[in-house]
Image (cartoon, rainbow, N blue to C red; front, side, top):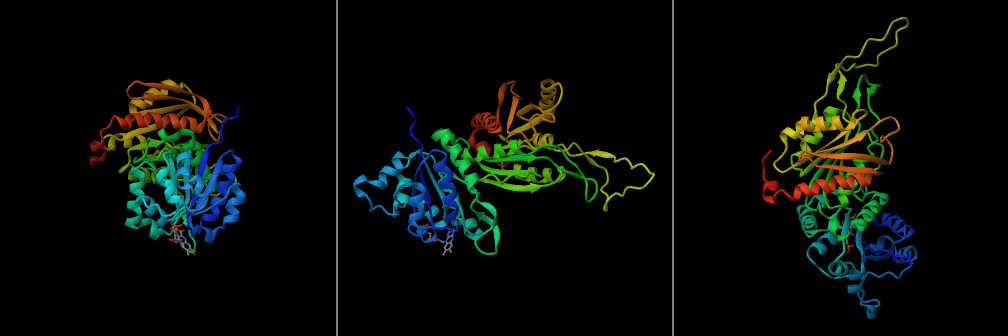
Length: 413
Ligand SMILES: Cc1cc2nc3c(=O)[nH]c(=O)nc-3n(C[C@H](O)[C@H](O)[C@H](O)COP(=O)(O)O)c2cc1C
């Protein structure tokens, strides 16, 4: 017997980014989901009913008065496994936050008991307005996943936060949320910081000392945390991957830049996961112009100095109740080195993995042992980097649960 297709209601409200929802719809139907599109009346001004009906293979209506015999205003929400609204306009967020039921989409949102995801898209001013932010906070408090908009080109010539994330990334959010079901939003209301990629330490304007980190593990951590409901700050060093939907991505280059961005974001975070490969050393002096090759002369040696130890600093300055997670990339004596690093850095969890030229870096899979300061030891067999990310968040969520919320809310750094 084949298992029934997961039922998804794709809500579309009247933003210019409605056209991007066509691509999301395509990805959902092609990967075996049963999708009913519920646009708002104004959304149909941007993308018409025939497009949604043809792509989903189902009739489409924005209002409660069509097909009344089947009571769609109640049935759609009750039967859905996921309601995903993309784009979510400022107006739709306001109506949802206040429990209005003046069209089919808002009725569906009130009757749904499955996970609900909103992917807002609007101009920066609308997004940052206290009214919109209050509505977003209300929806998050009620357990909805509200994906942070991306930063970039908006409708006109202006740029800023408010852009609908890439449909491929939205699809990843939908896939994760569906896979975890209603219990999956255990990081709702939390702010987490993830670092990813590898830092580059400049020698001169052309050359740098870098490392092989691709950022795949950090991006998997950011993506899975967002799907579990967290507000995510992703501090990303030299990564050639699309920004994960739902994460606020801060691009940095060197270890010093990473330190600044991570420490700043950590000030309001419930958890910090340092998955980035941060250079231990940097050239002692930066040469302002390209070092030239001189015929007949050996090159001058490059003297190195130590970089700041970000993980140890996070261990020292952590807010009360904050969970700090480090990664140890080791080539030899993997576990012994990991245990020693855990003790040295003062973090709660250390993800220890073996790295090498064809191991881990740039590969979609990983295997690790997660060591806990409480003596715990969790073996994660080789599998997708997302699977390791989920285990890390399980362990973080369990530790956050032990922290009373009044302590978490407190000032105290
Ligand atoms: C060209 C154009 C683009 C718009 N883009 C957006 C947008 O991206 N986000 C948004 O919140 N509102 C946008 N609006 C305003 C909404 O369409 C308007 O608030 C509408 O009433 C929302 O209806 P709905 O929430 O029922 O779909 C846009 C309006 C126009 C005319």
